[in-house]
Image (cartoon, rainbow, N blue to C red; front, side, top):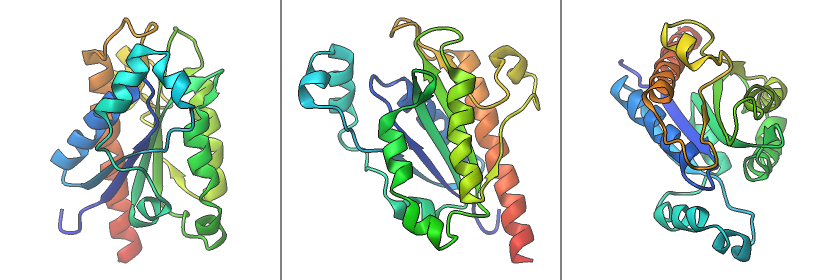
Length: 205
């Protein structure tokens, strides 16, 4: 593409599942011609809580070199994909706190007219995948953003089964990211880049 789509993949991940999906989306988007920033949001949990969970502590150490998201990453982007584990059927507080810092950009209308999408992980089946993504998308409506959900627009979505965004059941850490999830993430990334490119071209015409 002559003017690459700028995609920000912004996520929270405690034990690494959301981070792995974020990487799959970022890699696919780059292959589709996008310029990509991958950013984690700041951790809010106390050190003792992290240290009490071996997988959590390991992921914090492994992801130490990934830059933290700032409002500039949103302003820079043509499209944003947010990722979060569910917390009681809702967006994790770490990602929600980041969203709540965007009021300045919102007040200036600088969150509007961008493409947004989301993905989620849960510990259990029916553990809040759909409600978490719908809750996330409430913020996008307030931004004036354009939600590009994957829908059932490809055969892989009938395997993944979630039209709102890529989702994965990690079974308390016992179910690694599988081909079904990866295929869904790739389709979502390709769709986001394609629609964002069309929107960008149309707005600049």
